[in-house]
Image 1 (cartoon, rainbow, N blue to C red):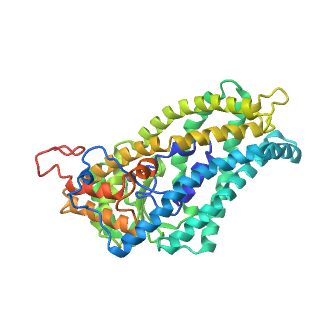
Image 2 (cartoon, protein in one colour; image 1 turned 30 degrees about the vertical axis):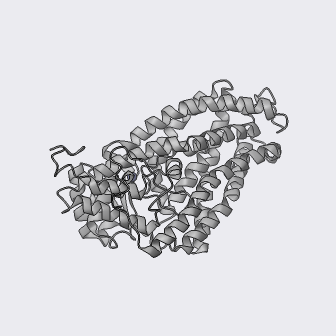
Image 3 (cartoon, rainbow, N blue to C red; image 1 turned 135 degrees about the vertical axis):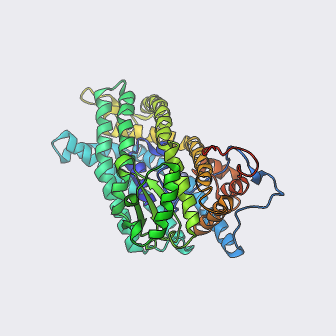
Length: 457
Ligand SMILES: [Zn+2]
């Protein structure tokens, strides 16, 4: 599921790559089916974990602790190596002149220019997919070994094939569009690309719930969990999110994973709440209410809109900088990479030249990973505060409920109880479970005379 989203984002919108990162609509914890890890470190206010004397709110039994340390070592390496490998592959495609050869070949297999373009970008996407496949296979192997994933290999490869199909159906036309923009406005194309990116970002959020059933089965939550629906409704009323029972779904996640999750996705008419069947019935309903409160926070606090605005501002400068960097790359390596202008086209406007732009944007995405993750962590922390306040008065002890839910989430995903601060800073799009639990344990504005942040009396 999440990996489908990742593929969609990373492949289809190669252009936006990691910049699109803030995954508010995505899983609450990072579902680790992919080599994409999780939540990070610094949280704005209280950082109780900085005081060594304080007991930790997130703990694991010894056997799970050993497993968590082992799997996180692998996860951390993959998370740095994976993106770097992606950059190396694109560089190799250019340096080996494969991109130039592929462009020449695509020019011969079809007569119509746009068909040639589709063929070129489809082959490119398949190559990038195949290059990444060994890492994905290895990570799936590890997830199975550690009991996080229970998905059998045929089903897993089936999902990969579907994700590839989606990325071809969506990604190839999108890349063709951007390529056309570069040809049409050879000097100011970065601005045109920026304008085109904005509606695509909105569309991708709107459409994602419609694509999810390709990978997983959904049923109305009320079908087998009527009691939970009634309780969720209480939180929905208190938060004013107005998500009616018809928009609450149960996802059949247990066929693939032991992980816990609940999330809100979509926008406007497609907005919905999804609870994994590994979660409903396995952890107390109160804790699901907390997770729902957290997810509601993303909506009530307009995180999607804020994320879109911040992304748009960043992208403006990123595209501008990448245009300059790409022009330099072509001047420096163009001849060696056989990237030359033709028929009056600037080198970057050719198909192989466009790969230089993909490389530049990918490098920018990699460098900006910590920036986008820091922003994402800030929003996630805000949602944690909101979630705890949202269930106040509905569950007996919001602090206890939140801490317990973080422990359940952390144990299910084998979250590292003492993550390396640099890894957290670079890689985590959520605060670490350790920091989230520690914050929740001491967050109690009601008893010490402070005002709640979002639900003022
Ligand atoms: Zn969240």
